[in-house]
Length: 451
Image (cartoon, rainbow, N blue to C red; front, side, top):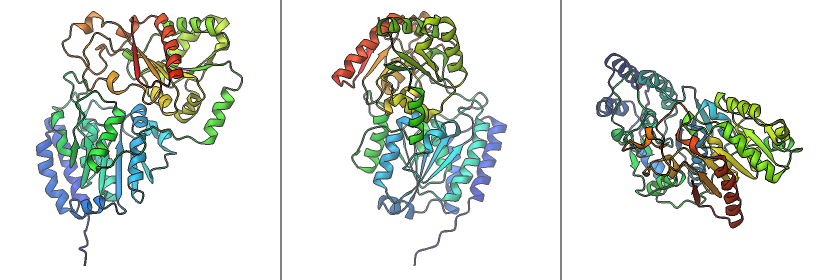
């Protein structure tokens, strides 16, 4: 007779809370000490039983947790992995964790049975505050007794949450450590990023060559499951109603239609709206009956759209369709499906465009004269699976060029547009022509353009 396992998550939660209090008092968190404390408690509470691994590897009905507590672009990039996990394990009960602000992207996902929202902050500077929020999430996870957990955010914090979930099998890619990684916690001596592999049962090493983040995620599945990927495409899930809304919005506008997104998670990634205005004037002068549909939400997008509309001459008003903060992510995806191209900054909307097969011209802040590593954003986050052109500065400005090592965006100035401001509107004008040529040739390799 199979032994009945009694689960008791109360001891685990108590231990988490004691650890949180120590962190608050000492401003110190160390991975080895945390795991040494928790493993005996996990075993005593029934969460380290060997039958879990047998169940998963034999592909019987099992419970899988997928963690994706990151942004919209990263979520779109992981859409193919979620699809493949469902294909490989058709009878599994799959639960997906996402940040609450991108829940609209997950709501129509056909590959999961349940969605849990992470209501916490997008990012934390206070480790104790983050740890407290993670305890609440872990309490929910432990009640579900997950057999396996995949971490798809590929950041140290996500691997910590993966460990706290209680899943016996925990799979992730190793966390990339950049010498100038800017993520930090102001009030605590945080654990060494290089040790986060200890949170995983299986931590898959990243390829040593330049590899898109999509392919890294598929690589993780291929190595762990020894199973080839069936479909390497991305997906966005929206309803027929979203497409109806998109068609109605674009019904009476000029053609072609270019989606324009001027926002960004950091000011350094934002090309000045004044220069976008010059670019629009050049395109309208040549193509006449053309529409720029401005997409985005939040303060950065709204401010940029307002600046652009205030500077551009009134004769171009009919060429502008301002949709900033008027439609959600799913409706934006439907709009992009109907557009001839995406033109804009390095944003999550760029990845939405790629997922619906909309060609992309991206304006990126990474200067061409700086060295690249396998973790730099321009190497791993270019538009995936569509014709694309990436416009970038020729040289770093002095504040950035004098540094020997660089962060993942190349430009080191965070709180204002910096290196990206050197790009002239004429280069965008030429870049759109290059993009049209690559669309005609069905060429999906990234083309990097600078002066």
